[in-house]
Image (cartoon, rainbow, N blue to C red; front, side, top):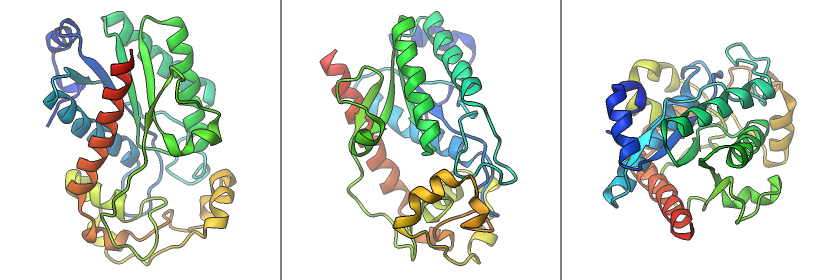
Length: 267
């Protein structure tokens, strides 16, 4: 699979600049993910997504490089739970801006953020930082963001800081409860690609934990995960074996790579 810059000598990064490669930037957090998944789950899954997206972009002739993963986003819903690191918004924004600025200094012209984490404050932080980077840097910085939730963030199709991504239309698992946090989908991806960081033995014995639709926003803003799940997960991790991981990642990579190609075609 495609390497990240962390696995490369500087000469390979230089070669990518000279090839006019676009940059994929994995975006995550360090956050609790139940008793069965590691704290770095969202960062690892963002990186795996980037590796698959990069493969599809390069198959279509677009040189691509993956930046070192950014792990210091904002934990909102799980704040206060042991394992969820609390990062101030201004700290996260400053660090993310510096990373984008460094990519511009290297000579890259395009960067696309791929997030493995969905907290509202995290998304707002990224949107604001990419907007500021576009205004201040010689870098086209776009956050690959779900078109179906644009309206909730005041985002428009023509905004220069976003790359509109359509929602998934396939079903790849059969959980008893939807994967809200550390459920079947995340567990399946981690078990396949990072088994050393996944307690599959524990996952198989966990009962499903339901979050009613009408309580989703309450959970998101609560900063009190334990009030909804004492073990820190929402969904059905025990059913991770029913997930078609490859179908999930191939479809995700297709949606994101198509979205990036569409943005590049209009520039």
